[in-house]
Each structure stands twice: as structure tokens, then as C-alpha cells.
Length: 69
Image (cartoon, rainbow, N blue to C red; front, side):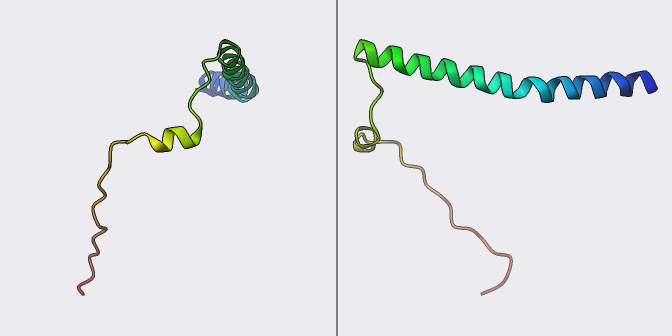
């Protein structure tokens, strides 16, 4: 049991150390992709353009209360 907890602690520390690296690498890849697309003239739609496109409307049901009105 003690060996298992030791392995678990080492794995948790390993994950804590590598998490920022993984997030940084993902962010760098996203920025690189955006720069490459902008260089090709294939920029993603801006917020105004995406807002102008019709989207699928989602219907929310009213919140129900257990209290009697």
C-alpha cells in the first residue's frame, strides 16, 4: 500500500509540473495556426460576422420551483 501511495504522489507531482508546459504548448500551437491562417488570408470570422450569421436557437425551459405560488 505504501508503494502505491508513493507512485500516486510521484504521478501527481509529475502532472503538476507538466500541466503548465502542456497548456503553454497548446497556446503556442493555436497562436501559430492563427498567424499562418492570417498570412494566407484565411482569417477566422470576426465577432460581428459570426453574430450576423443565423444560429440555432436554443430554448430554455423555465426554472421550476418546489415552492407553491
